[in-house]
Length: 79
Image 1 (cartoon, rainbow, N blue to C red):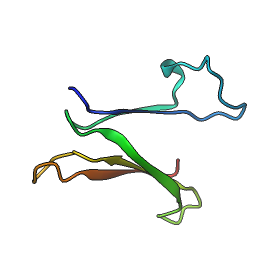
Image 2 (cartoon, rainbow, N blue to C red; image 1 turned 180 degrees about the vertical axis):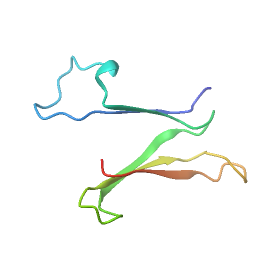
Image 3 (spheres, rainbow, N blue to C red; image 1 turned 45 degrees about the horizontal axis):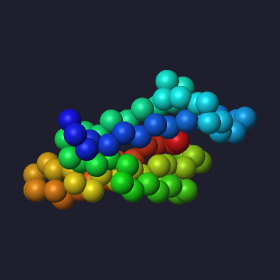
């Protein structure tokens, strides 16, 4: 669908290079629905579950489930 949003996540130790392609992503997250705009907000740096690893928060500002366009935040644990 259109405007779902796409987030490519990379893990690397040697640094970023311009030749890295989408096929080299460690994880690929596609927005949950059309017009959800996944990735419009990103946050991290907090260990929310106490496992010693930081979580990543990913916003989808127009995600809709029960109400129209209420938005959502998805958490990726221990990234």
